[in-house]
Image (cartoon, rainbow, N blue to C red; front, side):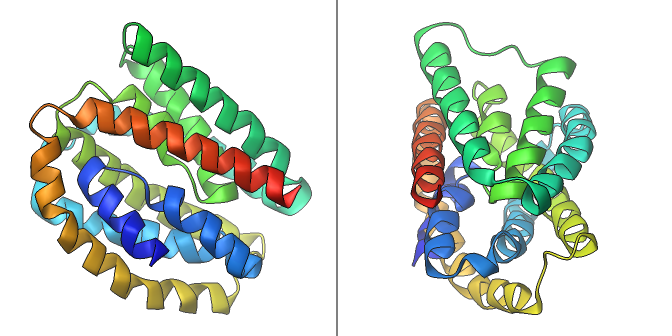
Length: 230
């Protein structure tokens, strides 16, 4: 159910799978994380790209992936050597601050530096916790709905594939996590199919509000998950 709801959110806004599914999976069986959620994170974008691949911002994607590479390495090191709880609290708080500032004032500028920085933070949090969408989404919040979804979809596909490889290399990708992720693809597909009407509704000028709301809720969930596991 968590993956289904997460797929509805991400299918309509462009991100949010980890927001809903990661905390539930962590509570049910921590040994499955973050591998299981990364399987769905890699699969769901393919469905979005099948519909909206022409709207990918390839230049911005290059900057985001450039930042994601070192961020993923740091995220893997956190999984192996450092408690992720303090990281979750810090990142969640920073996302909340960014949401408040951008909601009350001008949006974050979208340039090579901000996109690369967002990709770096997303690499750390995405690899360590399975929640990597808010930093990139905040930078793209003023873009059109199809551009947000398509660009984030390609970024999440490449990011999840990279995270799975890194987690396997550091010995934190058990077969059970891959198996659980494969099973969760079914409710993920169902959620994406349901997201169609909501996607069309948000494209009527409500995408930025939806991005800010999902980013804020994601930050609260990340902080709560970190405090609960501390």
